[in-house]
Structure formats: C-alpha cells, structure tokens
Image (cartoon, rainbow, N blue to C red):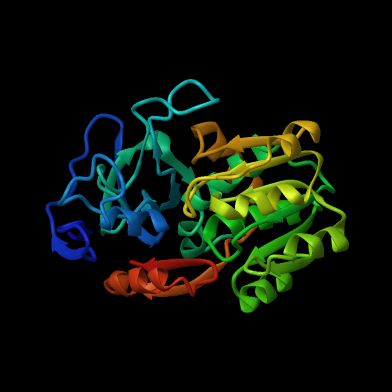
Length: 320
C-alpha cells in the first residue's frame, strides 16, 4: 500500500510502499477515504515530540470504510479509566503508532465511530483531533452554558474554529482574536459577534466596550498574550487552554485571578467518552467542520507547506 512516512527529521514525509497492516484480535482493517492535517504533524517532523519513530506512518485524523460503512477514527489511544486525566500510556495516532496518511490502517474497533449522516467523508476526516480537543476544552473543562459570552483566541486553526462552532450552537455570543483581518471577517461570517487584532495592545479595551467582558476563554497559545486575556474576564470566568505555542506565561497578576474567582484550566485531547459525546453533539447540532482546502492524497507534502505558511482558515484535508 501507499503511505506517507516520517523518513527523516526536519523534512516533509515521503511517499512509501509498505506491506498491508496485519489484522488480529479486535483490530479492524480500515480503507481510508480521507485524512486531515494538524499542527501536530508539523511539530513531529521537527522532532518536538517524545518517542518519535522514523519510518512510522504519519497522520492522526481519518475517516474510512469497513464492511460498507464509513467510520470516524478516534486518534486518542489508551486514555485510561480516569476521565480527569490521561494514563501514562496515552498517545495520539500517527507516530509512534502508524497513522492515517495511508491507504489502510489497522486499529482497534473501539476507536471507530459511525460517521454522522450529514457529513461527507472529507468533512468527517476534519473532525477527530480538533473536534475532541475543542469539545473537552470548552464543554467538559470550561462547562460552557447556553447564552454565555465566549472569547476564542487565534481564530483560524482547527481547534479554535470547532470551539467557536460549539459555542454558537449553544446560543452563546462569540468574540475572536486573530492576527488577520481576513480571518476575523471569515469568523464573523460564520456567526462570531466581533473580532480583534491581537497585535493591537488596546484590543481588550475594545472588547470590554463591546461586550463588558466574557465568561469563557479558549486559548491555545499562552505566552505574553495570556495577560491580555485575563483583562477581559468577568468575575467567575473560566480560561481553558489546550496549548502553549507562544511559550510561558510571565508577569501574571495573581490578584486579578483570585479576587475575581477566575479559573485557569489545562486541557488536552479527550477521553473515549469525550470523543463519543463530541460525535453526538456534532450530530445533534449538524455541525460541519470548516475546511480550508481539499487536496489529493498525493499532495500531502503541499498540505504541510500550506499549514506551515499559517495562511489557512480551517482544516486541510486529503482525499484518498
């Protein structure tokens, strides 16, 4: 079969001929119909994850066929029994375990979920990693309630967009930040109330003027900009963050946190129950992931280049 493998660090994955995956015990052989790209795939090529195995098939997101039915694959393996946090054995599909950038994948049947009828295979492939990460961050950890005011930072990425769509589905007022006026305009076209350029040091004042503050913030960057997020929190607000791409949080005023009863919540990926609940939520509200571009399987390296440019709005998906 054809597959894109991590052959060398600091290089794009290479198209390789591999033997068909073995199938035994509770494993199922899935013929992949579509897969999708995540920033995680970029960071793996840069050697920024532990337990990287050269020669492994890349890709965490995928949708595929088994016995005439299409399934979405849960990429979070071995979460464990505790819903509060993942087990030491937890890992994400696609290095070290072979992933979805291939013709076929062999995976335990417990990680397969029937594709919601309203989604195409391409749309379904865009859902798994971003969908469950956003769902745990905003629904499970931040406990978002109908009608609350929400800020999503760095709109344009898969997780941020899914979080925005979940909040809109629950009737919340959603505000966004971005470094791009175009991405803000696109978010507003999808239902966001307003957006702010995060390079503008006065953006918190503008949001406070527009909304008076927010109840929930979803962030994937942290870094110096985290202090700006705290400024727009209403008393009792929850900040749920799923990444730290901008680095450490420095200079945070603890008085602003404890006096206003603000909760800061870490979140990563999601449990098997989170994934099932996410699929049910997407099905109930007929949510369709935002897709930036659809490329053929052979153009996976081009997808990497596009994601590295940072110009995408939504997921980059590959048709197999």
